[in-house]
Structure formats: structure tokens, C-alpha cells
Length: 352
Length: 269
Image (cartoon, rainbow over all chains, first blue to last red; front, side, top):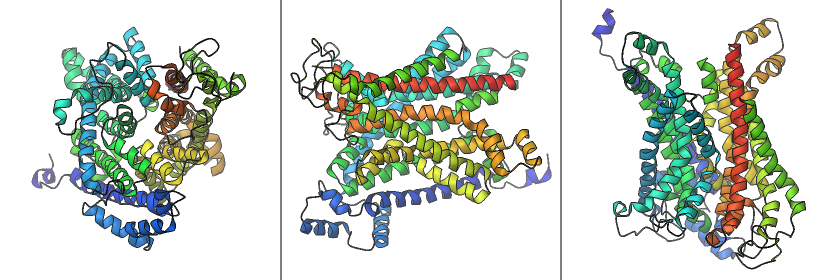
């Protein structure tokens, strides 16, 4: 072992990589705020007219313009909006006159519960299914499951949700509520049955991608040299699968989960509307229909920032869980070796 | 083994397109003619019954596919054209431009597709061309990433270096060496975009931000007849099935193309 390696307990390279990655994330967040502001406040020629409709009298338009600060220079509007948002003040809802952050707080809880339920269901299911299919590669079970997964992947999520509503609103099928009319006075834990159908609907849309990803990663890992070496040494196959290959196949799955969450948030909007689930999606839908500008801005901003945060965490986890990256001595090595998502059709080619 | 998958996908896709394109001529009634009872059950010539206003569901079904299909094809094509141009530009140009394009793609990937489309459509209106444009904007970053990654992978191979040493012009290398080799992944992605596009556009009409009401449109039909789901499920099921079948067909097609290229790639290697 070299001298310098033993002597200096220097800061690990992944830490400085993470600082850079954090800066990148913050920059992205700032650009997102700019995009949201431009799309909502600068791009429409007159937001007040968009909100009030084409027939509104001039006076009320002028009042609203003043109320929203639209009569001020655009740069000043942006800075004021950004400053307020940074200090947690997301404005006042035009529809209900209550502070937006207050209105959204509970909604976020509901959507988070929904997404957490989906992840808790999908990740173990995808892992088990992916490993099982990889071990029985090209068998009849494998082929049939893959066809079913392709069918699920192709079907638009909201159709699956409507199908579930239809199924469970039929007579004799009323053991689960088809729509989620939650009682706001009771805690969510007491009304978990309302969560079941939305969670199942969203899980079905998320399952194919993750399962196929785990399956492909497992197949790749099972064919690698270290598995052959381990088998030659007489290590039981079961042990190789669960202790050697699965951890390696898990790393790309982290990025997969991050990507899934991004699609899930989009899908959640539709699913929530279909099941009348009181989450952020129904709030966005209502805000758009009411033309509630501060509400729309806040919801879109928070959702996109959440996606940025999710990506950041996924990247950090990937680096920390890959020994080669965690122990890298130089930032450059991490940037070069970081395993992004390779689409499966490219992966299978690389496999050969 | 994979040829059947491509053929099956092409057949299903073509079938739905044929229904959507020829449907308007075959429809027995006008799309806004009230010819039967509200939520009337299927009877006689009305195979699929009547909808929430008493329109003939079959007629609306036959006429309502064109809008979803042309919009998703247009959105996917625009995204493919713009995205692959930018992706190639990023993959083959100097670091600065590459970083700028990749980073912009990353930023726009932070917006979940549907949220971005909802934001723009709700602010700027719901003219069909605007919806097409916003859906394609939501798709572009994915295409950029794919085209860039494929171009970088191809550009490092020997035959490109050979072409450079032969002194071929950059344009020739781009169009004759690199483009043909990244066409397959892009084609697969195009198929996937059609699948997502149909889902997104019909979802958008379902939420009520797509095509304006009296027009027949599959997504809108689901939205309009949702209240009568238990009385007259056909008014919801029929358009839902057609949307699903089209999405399935395009997806199978994409899977087939992708698998075939993976297989031939394996053979060559």
C-alpha cells in the first residue's frame, strides 16, 4: 500500500462530487422557477384577463392586476415572487382567499401517502418478479409475463384507473370503495381502504418498467465473470443470486425508481381526478379550472422541485452504493463512471 | 421469432388508423345528431347504444379517432425531428454547446410530462396546434438524450474514424455514417412516443383540456360519459378500448423493432 494512501484521511471524492452536484441541482431549481414564472405570468399577454375571462369589465381587471402586482415591471414581479417563495410564502389563493401554502400542506400529505404506498408495493414486487423472471429466462412463464407487462406498459394509466373504478362499482364488488371520498376530520390511517384502488392503479402503470429493468440487470449480472468464478468455487447458487448478483443489479434500479417517481407524479394527477382523491393532482386540476394563478404557480413549482430533489437523492445513493464510485479518488472518475439509465434495447446490445 | 411481433404491431396500429381515418365516412349518424334516449342501451342498428346526450356512440366513436391520432403522430414527429437534431448537435459538437443542450434537456426533464403540458395549455389556450406543440416539447428532452447518447457511442467506432481519415466531409460522415446507425433506437423511441402521446392526449381531453366539447373525440367521450358508467358502459369502454389498442399496437411495434436490432447486433458482434 502506498504511503500517501495511509497517511492522509482526506475528504472522499464523492463529497466534493456531491457539492458540485448540489450546485447543479440548485441552478436547475432556479431555472425552473424562471420557467414557471415565465409560463404563468410573463407569457400570457395579460394574466388578469386569462383569470377573469374575456368579458370581464376593465375595472375588475385593473383591480386584479394591482392585487397580483401585475402593473409593475416584469423583473420586479419575478424578484418579488421568488423572494416570497423562498421565504415560504407562496401567495394567496384567488379562489378561496386563503394562503396557498396552508391549502397545499394537507394535499401534499395525501399525495405523498399515495406515492409512498405505490413505492412500497411496486419496489418489492418488481424485485421479486424481476429476479424470478431472470432466473427462468426464456421459459414459458417468462415469455407470458413479459407479454403481460408489455400490455400493462402500453395501456395509458388513466384507462387502467377507469377500469378499476368500473370493476369495483359493479354489484357484489363493493368491498372496496371505487372513489375516495375521504373524511377530512379523520386521520388517513383510519381510512386506508380509500387508498387501495388508487395505489393499485398507479402501481400497475409503474410495475412493467421496473420489473423489466431488474430482470435485465439480473440477467446481465448472472452472466458476468464473477458469477462463474463463484460457481466454480462451489458457492450455492441461491447464495450467489441473493448475496452477489442482486446487490449489483439493485444500483440501476435506484435510478429506475427516481424515473418512475417522475412519471408517477404526472400519472397521479389523472388517477387522483378519477378516484376523486384529495391530493395535489385534484388541487392542480381545480386550480386550472378556477384559473387560480398563485395556486397553479405554487403546485407546479413544488412538484418540479420535488423531482429535482428526487434525482439528486438518486444520484447520491447510486454513488454511495457503488463501491467503485464511493472510493474513487478523483471527482472526474465519478463523473465518467456514473451509471445512468441505459435504455434496455441498448443494454441488451452491450450485453453481447 | 421477432418478425411476428413487428407484423402484429403493424397490423394492430394500421387497423386503428384505418378505423379513425375511414370512420367519419362510415358513421351512420352525424356526431352531434341526437338520435336516441340519453344513455340508451345498445339496440337494433345502434350497436354501442347512446351517450349522455343521446348521440349515437358508434358514430362518435368512428369520427372521434382522427383528432387523437393525428395529434399524437404530429407531436411525436416534431419531437423526433427537433430532438434528434439537437441531440446530434450536442453529441458531435464542442463541450460548451454539448453541456448547454444536455443541461437544458435535464432541466425540462424535471417537469413531469403531463404537468408541463397542463401548465402551458391552461395558460395559453387549447388550440390543437398548441397542444401538439406542447406535447412535443414535453417529448423533446428524452429524444435529445437518446440521440446524443447513441451518436456519441457511434462516433467512437472505427468506421467513423476511418471515414474521417479518408477525408470525407463532416456532412457526409453525419448523414452516411452516423445517422443510419442511430436510426433504430430513434425509431423505437418514436413508437414509444406514439404510445405515450395517445395516452397523454386522451388523458388531456379526459381532463377537459383537449379538443373542445361538441367535437367527437375518444378521450372526451370517456370524460363525457363517465357519469353513466354503470348504466351504459359501452360509451366509455369503446373509446377506451380503441385508445388502449392503438397504444398497444405502437408499443408492440417499437418492442419488435428494438428486439430485432438487438438480435442482429448480437449476431454481428
